[in-house]
Length: 249
Image (cartoon, rainbow, N blue to C red; front, side, top):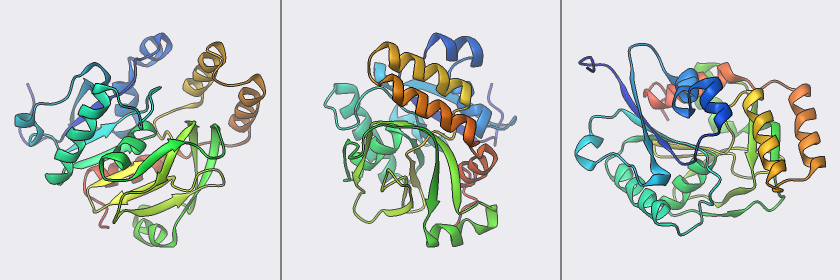
């Protein structure tokens, strides 16, 4: 039974979980809860790629939604993707808090009128330092977020054009839209603040086995893991600050 007055969040899962993530971490719901959750909160998971989404009658009971990464293309035309786009538009009309991660970042942009597609510079895998915009630096100063923020990346698609009226708040050497915000209720992050190095290493092995990346790309990504640490604590402050309304955009 849920406690009255506790915060309640939903993770919209957009990929099948690997056996490693299920066995080592208990699935992606717990991975996200490990970064974003607190003891007095309720977190639910909906397997969006299998057609599971919260019914509209229950949406008002949630304080926020998190959209995960995926092996699918955000610019695809699968039924579940189109259903998710429609659902996100409904959340926008209700001004619900939505945080999109990787594929979630891209599908959120699409739902709001942006354009996505294959990344112009190809795969971006490993630890990347993204650069916050001057306005984001000012807005996030109360949370002590560094202007150059390391994060784990694993994507071959990107946001080509952000939604109308959205603000790009971070970029990197490879990706022009690393983060965007839309009003004070929607935010996209291209990287994976929820990942740790172990998760990425196992994902690299899976991508290699499926011939989606080359051995040299995997080695470069692994080298970046040794050279730099993702700043998980800063990402936790930023993402929780957004989801709980502590950020005043």
